[in-house]
Amino acid sequence: MQIIKLFLFLILFAVSLSAMAKKQPHQTGKIDDWEYNATMPSNDGIVGKHTRIMPTGGIFSAPTAMPAPMLKSMRMNAAPELGFAVGGAKDANNFYDNLKNGYLPKLKSITYEGVFYQHYFDTGKKSDEACETLFCPSYATAVQKNLFTDEKEYYLSVGLNSNIKASDFARKKLNLVVVLDISGSMSSPFTQYYYDQKRRTPSQEASQKSKMQIAAESLVAMLRHLHPEDSLGVVLFDSRAYRAKPLRPVALTDMDAIKKHILDLQPKGGTNWSAGYKAGLELFKSLDENTEDRDQYENRVIFMTDAMPNQGELSEQGLFGMVDKAAKRGIYTSFIGIGVDFNTDLVERVSKTRGANYFAVHSLKEFKKRLDDEFDFMVTPLVFDLKLALDSDAYQIEGVYGSPEADKATKTLLYVNTLFPSATQEGKTKGGIIIVKLKKRGEGNALTLTASYKDRNGKAYRVAKKAHFKEDLYFGNSGIRKGILLSEYVTLIQNWLIDARKGCNDKRTPKEPVIIPFYRKCMLYPPDRPEYKYIETWERRSCPLQVSDGYRNVFALFRRKFAAEMKVLHDPSLQQEYDALKLLSGYKNPKPQSPKQDDWQTER
Image 1: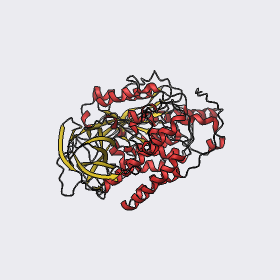
Image 2: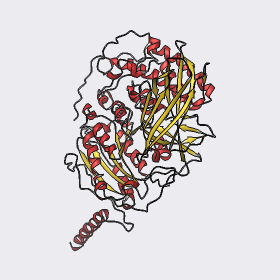
Image 3: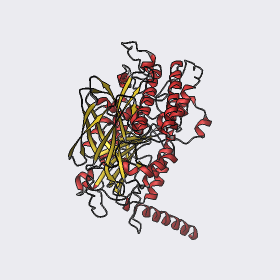
């Protein structure tokens, strides 16, 4: 009996020591400060007490060319200078994933800026042209004939150049709060729509990773890019929000333990974006109250979700309003979409906010590689409130391709709220252009463009340059030629999606006031379509991929042009777009489904 008692005592003692060790600093001073368990209360999205940030390391001065202190801390390629890319979408992964899995993509799953950021462009910057300020635009012009009407079209490319040496760039220290969706919809397979679950078989469920697994593994991969002087906080949300980890320096945190907790998360409950985001902002309050060197840090929320909210999130009181207000405090937001049913319509609108961007996870392997190359870029907005004013009696702006704020363009003004640093390769910049389509309205070939912008400290700059058009058909450089081709590609795809989605889980749109010939309609600037503003949807079931006979013919015609341009440009990076056109031009529509279905959507 005494032996048994002694044995039980030793077991209890060992368990007690283990529990104490978990919450006490190790010899290295690092602790496991994870607070979440699946049964903890949430307190309506305001969770836990504020934890003071304990800054580590010294204060570093900035290179004179850089706005605000930058710490040299990242691996860079050998390129002499960086360029810029606009905020908003950083890929079109959700579009391609839906095509691959036989779904009709959402309209905003493919954007001009998202497609541009998957490519490198000659920005038109001359080798002997000095760049004395943070942002130095360059311009190229082109004239081509419309594929269907033979009308002349006039284009201008805006090259997004910087004076930042790759060897000098590094981000600031980072206060990062991750807000992670653990709602019930995250339990569905990564390549399936959650609200299609009644259509799936158990074998489909078992053969694929869930969105929760992919999200957790993606987050763990992201944490590898934090430095000891950075700080990390974690908030989880379902129908409520939970502080899982207070905002604390990485140097003081047992990161291996945190990663294990993240990988053990299980989805449950409903979805309340606002509660999650509000709780994430709460973690930054200690910065406002206690931190003296706030300007030495980047402050960012990374919001990881499958984007299944309700429409109220776009109100001033909902997520949209909170993201905007946070940006004015210097807290910027990145959205990372998980799964094919990621709601790009909502996130595209939210990401127009100052300092915001979004990504869609395509595969874990690809996401890890992307983080290796771009993590420091994605958390470092550098140029704000870029305005490009056009002064010309001969031309006016007809369309803008490559900026999420294209809807704010006028006949004489283009607007971009944020530019992020971007990699260069062999003299070309990733996502480094904006394409402007111009309408000729008078005599003359010259125009003056004045770019005005602010750096992150609020200092204003102004740069004026001239550009000219030639009389004949031509492309000023390979960058504008490639940019026009990709602009036409996205235009055609978006017009197809507008027409294809009319009868699929969307609100019925008003009839078009004017009958437009099909071949002209399919290449219209999409925001000019009467249905464009009505096509956004909050329906969450999937729609089967459908391609009409008319669009199949147009896709086939445009595919031939695309192949010819690929050959001229000697650019294999265009293969993904070509493959999509090949799929759509030869697509055989599935047999119509039975009109009877169970569309009950109440979550358990």
